[in-house]
Length: 386
Image 1 (cartoon, one colour):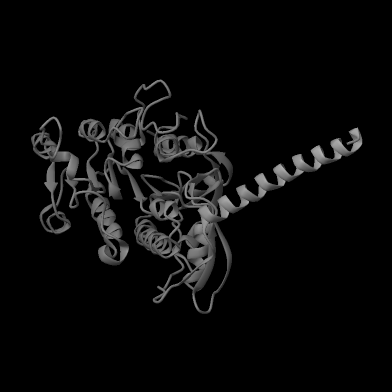
Image 2 (cartoon, rainbow, N blue to C red):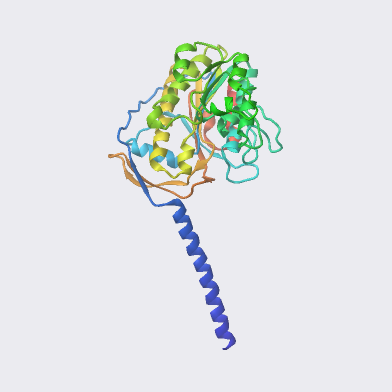
């Protein structure tokens, strides 16, 4: 065999291996992400055009986080609701970069900590810097300034985003430790799931009883919160883990958030509140378009209720953003008339996609353009003067 023939065969063999590797990778990615999915919304909801407040004073800030939400989530939700979302009432729109200190693609621990504290941290850390040093959150700064503070979420309270604001740990998976740390936060109002690790603990502590000794009313049902809590500090934890699915829980997040606002707003100095649409992230991970749309639309309807309240109040800034994107969602088609969307997931993990920021109310003009996620914190802190 001549040297030229040997070289030719070797080159062809190498190319064959490369092509085979590319084909295998393509098939693997396709198998992981699945095919196109279709969702049609049976009952679209009406959306009103709100009159924004005309004043400049910012007494309250409500930060709303759609966990894992990107522009594609919003595009898909807008499509299935026949081209209308409450979110469209936003007066300002920006874009946020979300990397962690040690990874380009972040998680809710690091990404949420940046929003809560104004500092970057490591992947999987909550409420601490990369060395594990606790960081003050907007909840802490609001309380130090004499304001009230609260959170409302649809996940278990030991999940990353609520812990970014009221707990501290280098490892978001230290669930029982996070809940034990949480009860030391000065927060006034807490709503979410996760009762399991308040009382069924390895250390045999009953954290609900400890909260009561600290002066909190502990509600184990939303009905108790609505009927029996008129003022003061409260933890409402009606569920062992997460809140139920959107078809079962209905507009619970909106009602819980408005109840929290009614309590926090009794403070004449104002308040800070964080509200999270938590389970968008779950259905991005599961690549389940129907449930993702239901969660996104529930979050949008909650946004509508909050914006309506803020429009009447006149001194409340509402900021809506995300901690990262989940699922690599893209819209491939659909029909506005039928409320149908066709979409595809590229991964079951988080992506590095830039996430949107929306703002409504006084100070909203500060949230335009490109910014790091830490800037959201510093803008809110400056506007609240805390």
